[in-house]
Length: 96
Image (cartoon, rainbow, N blue to C red; front, side, top):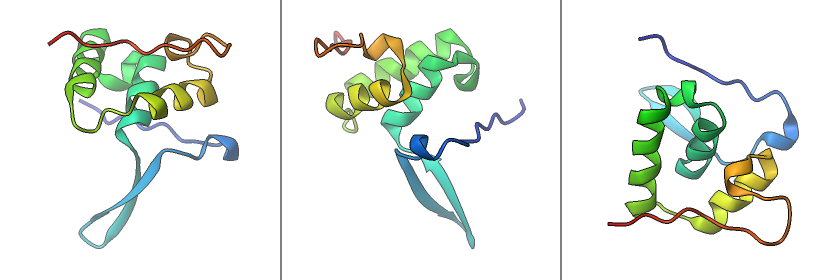
């Protein structure tokens, strides 16, 4: 399966990025909240909608869940599932 890479060209969209080292190579990747927003925006990046649903489910159950960050990133990227364009915001919740 080919790797899918999304290049961020807009300087205002350079947030939610962390640096990791792979051997001697420094690689910048999205943090978990940014990854969730990105794959919700384009499910192909996450392997399709079924895989994205599982990613979201695990994120919502996991230790790295951060509702405020998720909503903030959704607002900043204009992702409609996590932002309704007003101050009345919501985040999907998981049922265990």
